[in-house]
Image 1 (tube, rainbow, N blue to C red):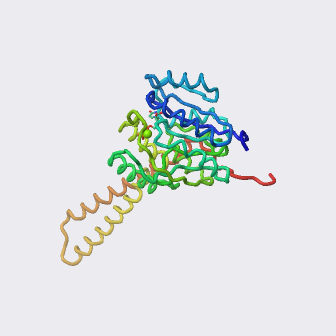
Image 2: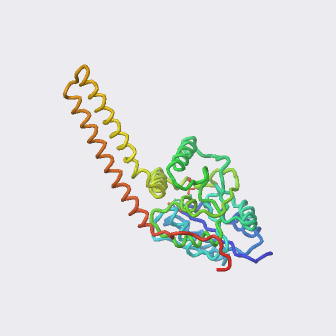
Image 3: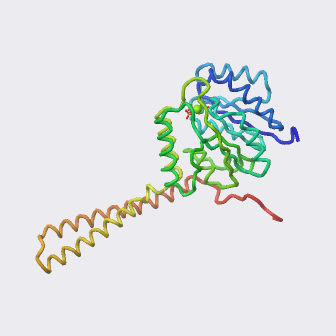
Length: 309
Ligand code: UDP
Ligand code: MG
C-alpha cells in the first residue's frame, strides 16, 4: 500500500511566519501517516515578512516540499489555484496554514477517497475562537448563497478538502478570473462526501482575511455563481405591470360608477411605464447573464466515468 499513490498538500500562506514552524511539522506528520507518497506545496501569496525565510528552511530540509512565491498578493483563491496547477498528486488536499483545519484529518480524508469519494470536504460542526459576528455573517452568507446559486454549495464548508485527480483536472480547465473554489466544486458535481470537524482557533497571528477581502469573496461567490440578480427585475417588472393593470381596471370601474379623478389614470400610466422599464432591465440582464456564462469558457460537460469508449 505504502507509496502507491501521490498525495499533494496545498497550503496558501500570507504573512504566516509565526504559524509555519508549528504548522509544518504537523502537516508533515499527517502526510506521512496516509501511507502514500506525498508532496507539500506552499504558495506564498506575496508576504513580505519572514514567511519566505521559514519556507526556504523547510524546503532545504525536505525535498518533498515545493514552494511557489507570488510577486504580490493575488489572494487566497489564486494561491490555491497556483498550487493546484503544479500539483502532481493523484489526490490534492487544500488546507489553511493557520491550523484552523486540523492536518490530522488528512489521513481520514485520504481513506474516504480510497473508498471511492471524488471530493471529501471538511464540514465545520463547530467553530472555535471566532467572533460571534464572523460566525453569524458566515451562517447568513452561506444560506443566501445557497438560495441564489443554481448548484447547492454545502453549508458551513470552506476550502479545506481533498479532491481526486479527476476533479483537479477539471479545475485546471476552468481559468475564470473571479474564482470561488467551493462554488466551482459544487458546479462540477462528482461524488462528494463530508467529513465533520471542529474548526480550531488560529495557532498564531491574526486573520489575513480582512473585511474587504471577505466582502470581495462573498461578492465573487454570488456574482460568480448566479445570474439571478441580473434577471431579478424581470419578476419585479412583471409584478409592477400586473399591478398597474389592476389599477387601470379599478379606475375604470370607478369611472363608470362614481367617477374617478383624472390623475388616477396618470398614476396607473406611470406605474405601467416603471414596470415596463424594469422588464427591459431584466431582459438586458438575461443577455448579460448569457455573455457572462460564455465568457467563463467552462467545459460544456464533465465525464465522471467511461465504459468501452
Ligand atoms: N491567505 C492567502 N492570501 C490572502 C489571505 C489569506 O494566501 O490574501 C491564506 C492565509 O495565509 C491562510 C488562509 O489563506 O493560510 C486562510 O486565511 P485566514 O486564516 O487569515 O482566514 P480566516 O481563516 O480567518 O477566514
Ligand atoms: Mg484561518
